[in-house]
Amino acid sequence: MKHTRKSIRALAVVLAAALLLGGFAATASAALPSNMTQAQKDFIATVGAMAAADMKKSDILASLTLAQAILESGWGTSTLATQANALFGIKADSRWSGRVFSKQTQECYDGVNFVTETALFRAYDSWQDSVNDHSAFLIAGSRYAAVIGEKDYKKACNAIHKAGYATDPGYASKLISLIERYELTAFDTLADNPDEPGNPGTPGNPDNPSGPSGEAIRALLTRLLAAIWQAVMKCPPIQLLFNLT
Image 1 (cartoon, rainbow, N blue to C red):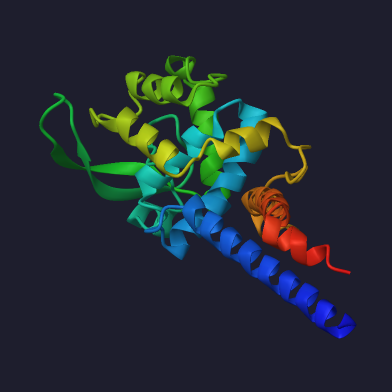
Image 2: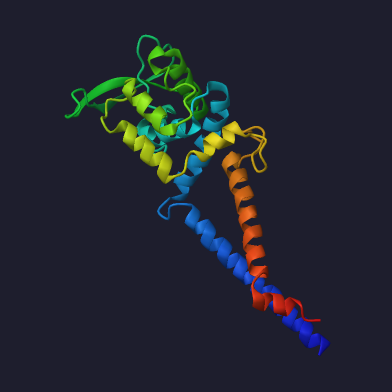
């Protein structure tokens, strides 16, 4: 009889674990858009880490920086991103003394019609350099003053468009859509609370290849696991099995 009770309790543990893992898998799957590719997830983790670290220095929302990188570089797959390490499509005017990359681009000057033209863009040695220069570019331009320090991502997106960063009339709405779809504001919180449990103290640390997003996600999932386990253990049938002696 004692062995039977032990077997029943062992079965209860297995059942609880199955329920726990099942709930965990369902929750984790629901946390990200189902149509995201691994490359897109990697891009968000990599550039998001850079943006979060940069936000602490520049006071430019990490979510805005990341959304611009996604939109301007096509998730890091554009010609500028792959051949010039340029994530933000910043043109090389007389103020730029670094490397340049020439390519065709589309502009919309009248708010309706797009025209194709050839332009010179700033080129970099790495994506990190591109992120750094993006912030330096915004800070140096007085027209972008409303972007610096803005904590509302919608206002920041509208401010950068109004200041003339891009000629696309739908630029702000596209940025906002990306931020909301992929919950990029998580990187704003990461930058504001570097010492919060689950957030590393130094985002983008080369000794932490997973980046802060990985740490934050692990902390979140740990809390989810604990919550699911508590819910399972409150289930009357499970309690009954564990109370058998």
